[in-house]
Amino acid sequence: MSLTLLDSQNEALNYLLNPDYLDVREVLYGGRKGGGKSFLGCVFLTQSALCYPNTSYFVSRNNLTDLRKHTLPSFIETFEKMNVSKIMYKFNGQDNIITFYNGSRIIFISTEYQPSDPMYQRFGSMQNTWGWIEEGGEQCQEAYSNLVLSIGRCKNKEYNISAYKLLITANPQKGWMYDNFFKNITSDRRYIPAGATENYFLPKEYLDTLNKITDKIQRQRLLLGDWDYDDSEDALINSLKIRDLFTNSFVESGDMYISCDIAITNDRFVIVVWSGLRIVDIFVTRNIGAVQKEFENGVEVTKVNYQNLTDKINYYAQLYHVPRSNICYDADGIGHNIQRLLGGATALHTGMESTTGEYFNLRSELYFRLSELINNNKIYISADISDHLKDDIITELSYVKRASLVGEKLRIKPKSEIKKIINKSPDISDAIVYGLFLYILRKKI
Image (cartoon, rainbow, N blue to C red; front, side):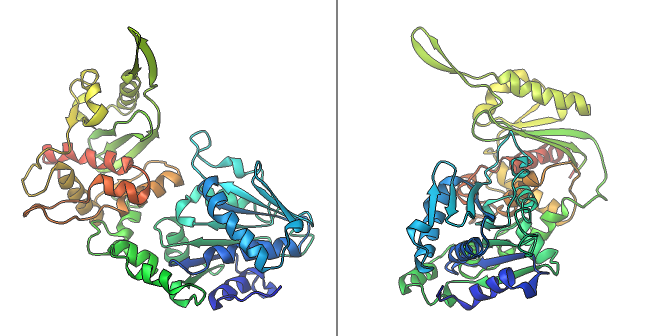
């Protein structure tokens, strides 16, 4: 095999394949665009699979479409450079497995969240030798934790090789990678920065494109590889303070409240239960409205069972003894359809004027007030939640940004812009921020 690799790629492979580094279990590689992340991952798994017959490896991404569209072509390109001819492997498109002539295989795995398997137990029975998490920022901690459990279970003892080698390739993203490799770094982990400026294989046009990135956050992440990008001047909430939300146990309990973000189909229906400024429970689901299509006078109409929504809210109100007057929900969109079923609760319209006139609208006011509370360690999330949900909260709050002033009024970036960045609606942070409305009205804060 004759390959020309970057110094950073050679360093990563040394940690992953050299027996002298058995103590190094995980390598995080990348941090910037153009660093050869995918090529490194393909070389790591291909070389391992060819070296050790009948072994098994995984490469994971959030969905199989991206693996087939982007990662599979990278493998084929790598095979050509490593002189692995087409007769030496085959790709099963139904099972999404590359099988080599020596019996080794590379399995493509989707880590997309499935409500029926919130703890990712579907990975529990897998038996792999080593693995590669591609685009780690797309994947949550629970997926990572369960994939790790599958490593070291396929002929590691037989070949007397390390029982735990994991490559993670990613651009900067808050969450479990930041926690593991920067906040709580241990001796068995290594971070190797790499980017386009060190990659002499890239065409000049690619570098020119990266240099033209004008968005400050994207420039910090993709060009500069700054893992603390969210502490920029337009970020409202300090990234470390967001993580403190889950350990601020000194925050006192108080009156019980419920705040809700209403949804029936693709977006998430969220219930947040408060005791003072402690969040003691969070419920999240999808498709609770049971949308049905019926025909009336020959015309198809869509029917929604709004009772399902209010029944769930009432269940938590009974469970935590929350009076109706201490329930708040967004009445924009479909939320206005449940007002008759939740009489006495506060219907919130976030596009209305702020309570002080200082902000562009009420939504901006609530998020500015939330940022002040979080930055001053005034809120505690004591709810027993999954790592997946925790990652979602961290991500959504990390993208609460200050927008340009409208006249003299303070404003946050529109929800539509946030959805484009994180590829989903910030439903959980919205449900949290709605809870502050009742506090403001009653001068609690």
